[in-house]
Length: 76
Image 1 (spheres, rainbow, N blue to C red):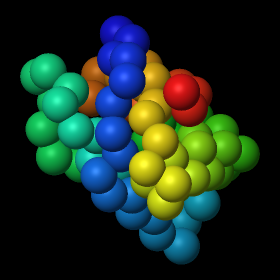
Image 2 (spheres, rainbow, N blue to C red; image 1 turned 120 degrees about the vertical axis):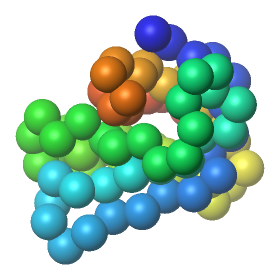
Image 3 (cartoon, rainbow, N blue to C red; image 1 turned 135 degrees about the vertical axis):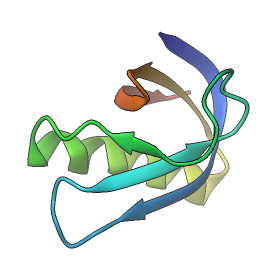
Image 4 (cartoon, one colour; image 1 turned 30 degrees about the vertical axis):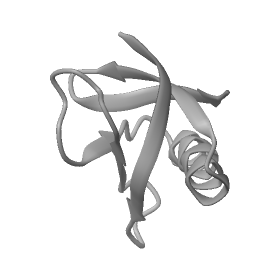
């Protein structure tokens, strides 16, 4: 499900290239850390990059969350 106009509160990553998480404010039904879906190393890096840039610059994002994992995002 898509969630629009959300703020990224925190981002986190680990040395494993497929292990990254984010906290997105005000996402109904989803609280705490959400894992970025570990589909591919490049995919995790790309999503984490967008979320990190949004967090650092106070921008909003639109995120797609499926099974408590972030699978897609774009910055507003």
